[in-house]
Image 1 (cartoon, rainbow over the protein chains, first blue to last red):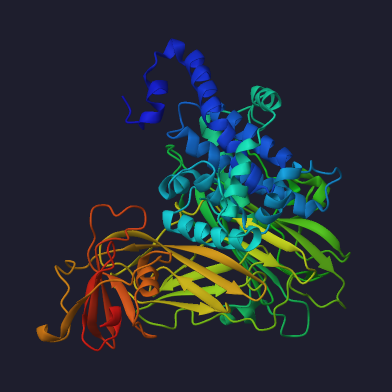
Image 2 (tube, rainbow over the protein chains, first blue to last red):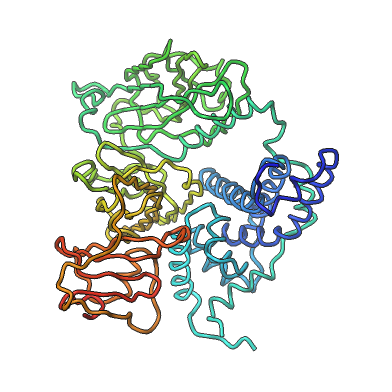
Length: 175
Length: 441
């Protein structure tokens, strides 16, 4: 058996005849488990562009599905692919000029946050969401972003500092 | 209690995708499906990736003065567009018949564009990038100017076409001079190799002869920096957005004859128009690392106004390290990752010995309170008092795998060639020579 990481062991061990069904089932589970996190990270990464976030996420999942069995770490692969697709689309938009349609505005309660996130770099946005919204440690953030852990720490340090400046540092009562 | 920004950030947990629409989109399949056989997919992937790489980097200006005499148009006429294609090994795609890597150089006046492409075997299926993603050449070209192409393959040629015809190459025409009519064109540079055809393309703007060629982004104080001028040091030279690349801030790492472009991890830049440009790279970990000896000084050069580096010397143990350099300019900021790999020529030092008598060695502990990031030598210098400009902080031992950054073990502080302190990274406890000031000693 090929040495694979434990998170795809189930895919690798199924008999060939059952592969398609099982893969579909596993990707469905993968979508349920990781989909919301991927979307929220991309939503922040794109500065609140729901259309780009959903398309990049869907395309990344579709590509992962098409390449199933060849991806060693599907979750990290999907994150990295989705980041790249979203970035390509944002760059493409900049080259094309203003978009013909108005992108969907963020919900009112998120306007302040999205405005602040847009003042961060895309990698700072992704790192801060993966760390503080998805509660991942720096090593896992690095794995999903495809960058080095020291770089993640730099992004987090800068992002926290900037968000404190923009949104306030005072503590609030959770109760 | 969380800080206010954390509370705001937590609101993102309430936002959800339109799941039905996303699932339907996934079910429709990937836009890049319709996959050909594996071998063709590999080549297509390589070619597409190569074109994408070319689109993302390497539009350089104003360096290698020796080359300018070849292309600078010093006789008063327009410069020569000088193109070279040169074979440089094969690209290991896992197949028995891998494509050949072809390095490309396109020089025009002070502008030089370096990249690479690969050969395409006959009957391969190639997914060309959209015309909007073709690399735009960093300067305008003067109409009617000469074109010269050289290659170590057969039949080197330059083709020209209308951007709307990309990638229908049968509609492109062979040229030996730039067109007389100003406008936007796509130039294709080709040569034949035993492994197939090598091809790369640039989106160019041709201007009338009375319009002098101008770089896409002018920056009069071009500063190539001390590239290759500091023997024995790793030199990372930083270039602002538009200074060397029209697409992103760049960093060049040199060590002896080794010279590579570092990875631009991300950047944020405010253009003269007031618009802000951001960019990000996520594929840096696979970049080839520059081999260096242990303990090699690292210096930063270039136009940045402030720089933070995670190391001042290379590590003392064997293996890879991603040097992270964050830089600021008046117009923006960028973070670079410089892949280095330390190659040991002898055994690493067993222990650290201070260059002061045993009676002058004083133990210290870090000040209480919050510690500042990042890691590496900056973690030590940022959290302990007493460091002076010019002090070198370098890692001497390593514990376990040390995580991705390897920030563990014992580090030493060198001042004027003498070891004056040792520091344990985990605790920031250490020993320093009396009077050094390190750790308050």
